Length: 208
Image (tube, rainbow, N blue to C red; front, side, top):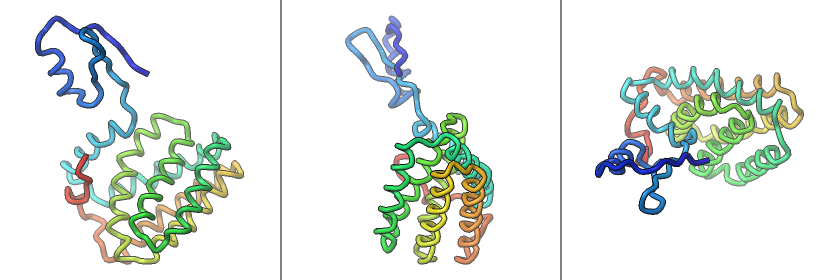
């Protein structure tokens, strides 16, 4: 969906808008600008940078995920579609085949949680969890080399959440997602990582 408006007769208008809106503005023809409505992935980097600047800790990010992720799973179970279930099944199958590849597991973990959030069909919830999800997955990236069993435990939890979603069992989907996020904290502590460690700039991908 695009919002269109006629170009103002001010020489610097396009440059100012481009700087402020960055990738969201493009020129169509000589006299028209087109502004594309941002999605959650466009908005998340600004929130992530703010959290880093305010020295948000792993504990704070984890606590937020403990609220948001089970809520997404519960709503996904209520609003599931055949397409959504097929995407989750595909994700689980691909994860099973790459358990020894930590980087691929991290990528598929990110995809899995995004699929569950999209399945919730709640824009406010999706946009709230996106930056938290990004930061938590970057933390998983740090955890995996220190705890080889993390990928297998992740897959088992994902399978249980997906089973509950496929059955339309919102309570079990929320319960298993809650267990999954709790297990993340246990893994963090087993790896002797500090819960109160601020999210580091070095953990953030370059394009954020």
